[in-house]
Length: 471
Image 1 (spheres, rainbow, N blue to C red):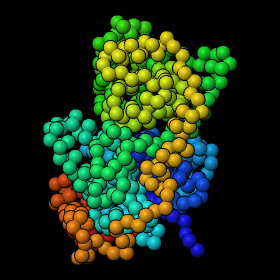
Image 2: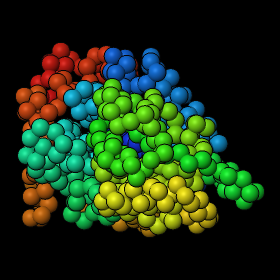
Image 3: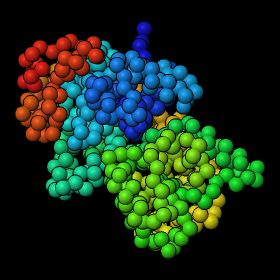
Image 4: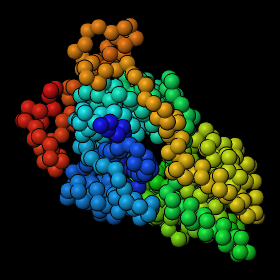
């Protein structure tokens, strides 16, 4: 009997951390598994308790992976209205405080048995492969698809020696993505360009936001006023998420925007600084802790202000459009997808921001028709993903043969030989603790330690393996 095609989705974060790479791959797994035509597995990081305390909000921690899995499935079921049918498997991870992100530990491809290794989807492929040491992704899987979520170069440019760091990171990203991925999907043109990549937004919005939008439309059709004249912004409260730009715009144009009250919602390491800076702008600025964007406190706002240019495709902008609001955002490649929506108003300079905001305050948002509502949905996002990944057609035979190890082979054509040599070099460099540390890896991340191994039911490493020597 022919078995179902297996798609393994690996991502870099998990709920309850409300970040894009925790939420969007979760919905992707749910909607890819809905028709039952494929077997879907979602691979998410498992963190030790001390890392959970640093990452997860509201003092939420889990003693066992099974507890976190129940939390994830319940959260998803409440938002989709149906039980999930895909598998969840955990891989060992560590939280990098300096990078504010979770990095894999060991060879995470091992969570998928070789006999099930058909297709791998790497959500943030550069992030997942910077320090990868183990089986070559292209060798283990028949097809490896990378989905580029994050504009890493833009974040790095804002740091000390940012231009040099961005230059080096650009080539590091190109290196690992080219040797480990067959196909690359960039969510928008705001991301780093890669050879043979395609730009396509393969994300949708949580169905709850579309339901909120439908209720607002009903109010409008019944002659009610669905929105007040308030404006707001919600996002992780770090300066690089557009807070600095928004505060400057509002400070410099207080006279033109007289009477406008703006509320900022978010939590993050720059919260205190943002709060202090907002006080200097004026009393019309209020700062609040982060909230779920679907919370009723956001339903009556009419205008969503988002000047951020570090996002690739801003999830909160999509959610605001789904709820029927105006979105005022920068004329930037990250917002290209949103331009098809009449309630999206872009600006290219401060005057444009003021004009777009004032106009939105005096108008009512346009009705979101069925076609545009569908474009925001995860059903449409799944259709776009299947087309962009070419999974809507029979899987073609690829050059890599799943049954052989790349490092033991001696006869390749010229192109394959160059790529294989490059892969071997990366595998060699990633196999020593010293070289890993030089390139920014977390200490002791070559293999999971005893605690991580026991919590995940893995073989407990020997003393030598645990010391970080090459294995």
